[in-house]
Image (cartoon, rainbow, N blue to C red):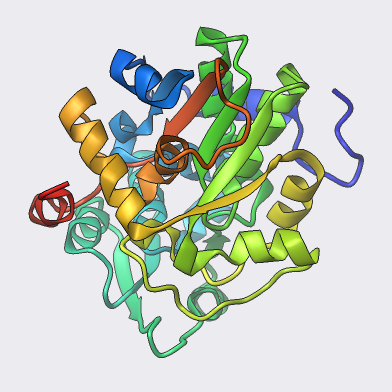
Length: 327
């Protein structure tokens, strides 16, 4: 497939990222469920990034970006901004590569993700997202003051290429997929997956799924420009972005089939189904793609082969129990 010339990430970039990150990244399993197939009327193939390093797909992008740093940049160190999963991934990659890491995280970040980020050796700087503090601005100020390299969670070609590596693995196992559905926050995952998948199989359709309360990418796609929303109130802490990036918006407008939304209740039901029927613990944001498919929101899937990215499993077990109880 001919990729539009203004797009700066291509299939060869995704393949190069795969080679660079291979020593550190797991090839995650693709699981099936006959019960899910019967329930949804299609063949489902679950790409389980819950079993990835750091418990989420973000490790792919973090390792892909940090392995691009020059020796001088590695010596300076890196700074990331994240609600949790990207922070953990950056901290882990930095530790493995011998790089100093700082992560800007919200004060209300899940304790599990905060502990993991610190456990990998990163320094954590807090911000108040409820008060509207700008995490990227804080990270860039630290970068200027301390000479650190900023590692964005989605607005970066290296990160996007790294996230796309999961699509290479998925299509190697199921080459005739018709649809891929992923969670969507800033759009880095969906962008990488879409570039890789549509370059290999042009007819495939890719959809991203956001929480109803946090549909900044959906609004941006509809209006053709980056839309900023207030801090979203949703159980999907990993999908609480307030604005996409022009980079990811351009990719998705050119190549993806669209953005869908799900409610918190639908996320909880998908989490419960995955736990009860497939014995997989998925965090709320990680279940977004599955939630959309489970509730009939993905167009034209009857009898089709559908890849579902379960993007992460970093959730406190007590909270998980509360969210799935009684469903």
